[in-house]
Amino acid sequence: MKYLIIGGTYFLGKEFARQAAEDPENEMYFINRGSKLSELTREEREHTFVMDRHDAAALSEVKLGRIDVIVDFCAYQPGDIRLIVENLGSSFGRYIFVSTTDVYKRGTGCDPITESAEFETRDFGGEAGSYILGKVALEEEVKQLMAEYGIKAGSEPEDHHESNEPDDKKAVKPEFTVVRPAFIYGPNNYAPREGIYFNWILRAGQILSPVDADGYFQMAYVEDAAAAILLCCKKKEAANRAFNVCGPQRFTYEMFEGDMLDVMKGFFGISAVKVPVEISVIEEKGIPLPFPLRSSESEYYDCRSILELTASFRSLFYGLKETAAWYLKNEKK
Image 1 (spheres, rainbow, N blue to C red):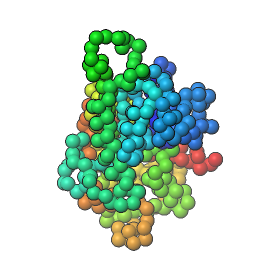
Image 2: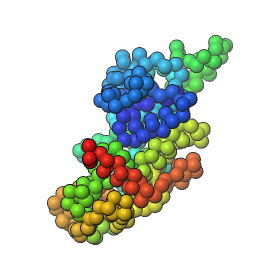
Image 3: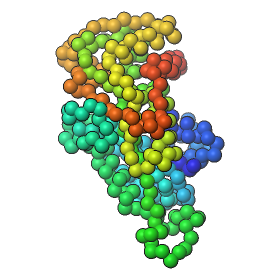
Image 4: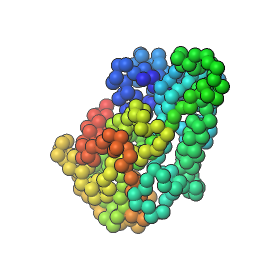
């Protein structure tokens, strides 16, 4: 398969690219700003189009013939996908848009939240509010575009020979798949999640524990999330559908903290203690805890569809062990 990855140099995108490249028959191409170019192999550098994704003229010069799958890790604003589809100098078969479970409307009481649940329409303000509404708008955008556009004239596959059929009959409509990850964690994570705890343990020998928290959350180790997206690229059953990407288990702060402390002590000989703190103090002092503190702020997502696609999600304990090993290695550099 021929992949065009938009982004692909950070965290989830980087892991996806690594896994896809394990198959020597795959062709991997990238569009990004080149900020990590020096860290890539020579072949990766040669296959990277360094540009701003909003540069229509530069996109028109990306002439790769028929691309099987575009995987977009960094579309955030309305119009981001349309610009790619309308200006890319190559045709493609499927567009994978990496969205988020944050698109779902909060506080509906749905348990679990399926992929057909209502979307959020309220603006919560700030970067978070813009991020959510941007992803909501882009989900509708990718569906509309794949319905509207066939293979563009001048970049048809070689087996699309001239025929007497009308143009609208000859056009091949691209497919889309939307993936909606919940909390992703693992090596290279730039979001302040598990790294907060590693930092507390290494710097202070303690973690702050919200003793009255009853919130819950679902997680996906980055390797598992990337593997799920790769399945969506390959499987026919994934066409024109959306998938919640996370494991089925509901985690609590107590469970997360327990696995974190057990991993650090059992595998790395680093002990730490819990310091109990009430939610009111956490909020008053602005302590940056990464997950919902209250059940009223928590949502549970139905992940049966991605599991039926044969995705799997390893235990939190395993994921934290692997992440801790990476974190400690990089701390020494």
